[in-house]
Length: 525
Image 1 (spheres, rainbow, N blue to C red):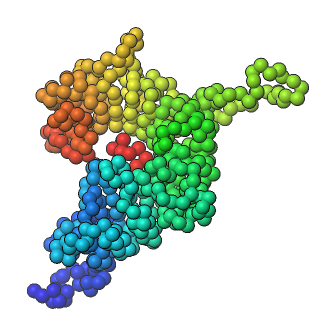
Image 2: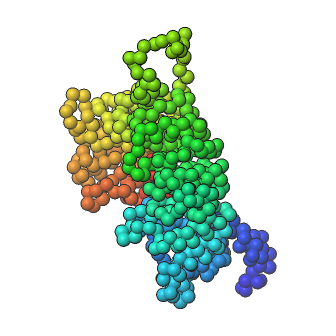
C-alpha cells in the first residue's frame, strides 16, 4: 500500500498518522541509544523509522581518520544534526567500542579520494560539527601517538575544530587529553583569554583537561577565566599543578580529579589544594594523591562518597593533628616564652570530626589494619574497597565483620604476615576462606585466584565452581588472557538461572565501556 494511504488508514496508530516532519522531530528528541532500540523493537514500522537514520547518529566514537564518514556527515546535515556525543580517540584507546555511521555512506560521493587530504578532512570535520546543534558531549584524546606529537598536523586545524565545538549551544561536557594548546598564548600576552577557542567555553557541567600543557603557569589564569564562566560545573579534572585552583569557587562541584602531570611538585602545593577542598563541601567524589602530608579541617568534605587517594590523606582525614605535626613550627622550640608572646589561658578545643558515608575507597599504601583503625568512616556505607596491602589473614576477617555491606573487593596476591621478612602468596585454601566471609560480595578483582594455582585453568575452574556455592551473589571475576597476562578488557561473568539460581554457568565477556568523566577511571566498575 502506498505510503500516502498508510497515513490515512484509521487502523494505523495515531503516532504514525502524523506528518513525516513532525514524526521526525519527535524521534529526534530521543537522546539515548537504548531508547531508540526499544522504540525500534516495537514494530517493523518503528524499526524503519529509526534504523539506521537515528541509531547510528546519536554517538560517534572514532579511533581512525575515516575521511568518508566525515564527508558523509558534512554533506548530510539532516542526519548529523541528531548527534549528541562525539569522541575522538587514538587508535590504542580501546576502553569503549567504536560507533559511527556506515550504512548510508555514499561510496562515490563520500569515498572520493580528495576527502582523504588532511585539509579537506579537517574542513569536513568542522562542517559536520557545525550541523550538530544538539551536541552535548565532546571528548578528544590524543596520547602517546607514535610519529604524531600533536593531535593535528597544524595548530590552525586544532583551532578550527575547537572553535566550532565551542559554539555548540547545548554543549555540557568537554574533555581534552593530550598535548593540546601547545601554541596557546600565555596570559601575559593574552590577558583576556581570547586567542584559544577552549577559553571561550561556557555553561559546562563537566570539564576534563589532562596533559602537561594545562599545568603551565602561563595557562593558569586562562583556566580561572574558563571556570568562572561555568558556575554550574559538577565534574572537574585539571592538573594538580594548576596554580590558581584555590582562587576558584564552584558551588555545584561534586566530582574532582587532580592528577600530577609534570612529575615534580613541592609539598607546599598540598595546602592550597586542601583549602580548595575545605571551600567545597559539595564534593562527593575525589581523586587526589597529595605530595606530602596534608593538613585539612576535620569537618571538611562532609558529603564525600568516592575516594581515591593515598595513605597520607586518609590519615589526615582521620586525625587533624596528623598533618599539622608535619609542618615546621613558626617559632623555634628553643625560643623562650616572653611577656610579648601571647599564651592562651586554656587550650582551644579542636573541632569535632565527622562521620563520612564513603561508599568507594581506594587508598594507596593503606593496609588492612590502618583501615580498621579509621574513625571517620561509617562502616555500613562502604560498598567498594580496594586494598593494596595487608598483613595477617585475620585482618581480612575483621574487615568482613566491620564492613558488612562490601559488594566489590580488590585484594593483592601477596600479603605480609606478622614476623615474616618478605611477602608471601595467599594460598588457595585461604582464598576459599576469605571471600565467603564477605556475604554480599558481587565483584572480586585481583589475580590471587589464578596465582595460587600457578595459572592452571582447570584449577581456576574448580575454584570458581566452589566460590559460586559459598558466595551466592558473586557474579564477576578477573581473568588472565592466553598469554597468562592480566586481561584488561575481558572478565569472567557468572550467570545464575532457575527459580532458586540453581543452574550456574560462567562465560568470558567484555568489560563495560569506560565513562570519560569517571573520577576513578573505571576502577570500581
